[in-house]
Length: 373
Image 1 (cartoon, rainbow, N blue to C red):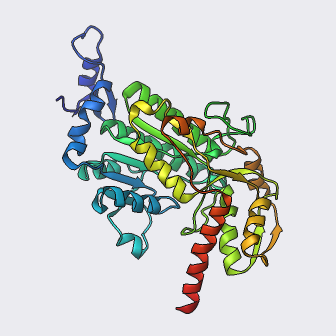
Image 2: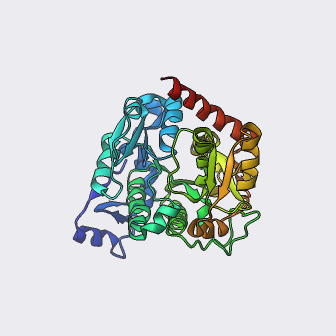
């Protein structure tokens, strides 16, 4: 089995000199030289092969966000506690730290990332680190650094070490000129937020690296994700999380989008399950590398109606945030996820009534515990 070697600039030029027909084409990433054909064959040299452990060794970046902790919990049940490493630049809560391996990881520090992958023999990398839509618009330089430069580090390391790489995309990867109802997998995108632009960039770079270097890149365009066990994190769809917290705590909710703003949404359990399913799907079933996934689509008005069936005294007002409203107006109203359903059997479990009952049940029981303790 050929071994990747660091080579000098002179040696690298020699390897690339025309006329050396006996040598494979060589590319260099951060001083590491290898051929595209080497990527797959060298994967077992750099990471644990499934034949040795029967399980992947997973690293989750940005692990303390809305999705990372939940995904780690699901993957640890499937693959074992010590085979899933959460990472972030923030200090984890005690219950997160005690639930399984956690490590400091800054995606802007290439050397740190590479050491983590090598020292822990990582085979799957789930890249959740990103600044979301509204937060990104408030600090474009930081969003560009985290969402694009950080992603390039992840991409290079994944190629170098033959990793299976998952990067989430978003409804925000589409723009005002995209078909909105429904929005297919392949169409004009042209987003107008740095978050959306960075996600289109990630989709295209991941697919390019797949076709050119054989990178096992997998991507799902998430709709708005609703979760009971995390606080809203600065996204345009976060009103659909905030309403449940406010309904239980105060009985009053102020919505920052217009009542008729329709957006695709999904309960977190469906989202995490879809992520695991696409990561486990055999490569030959994936006709594309980036898929839409969806579960339901609703407006603030429709969500309020469903919540008020359970909490009829809930008072709702609307105070529209023009920045978030402009973002929402450029996003899909409905996702066409027929390709995901056909290729790897995607099927959601939660519709709007089940979502509302689950969220209120979770937050209501949590509130009762807080009041009695």
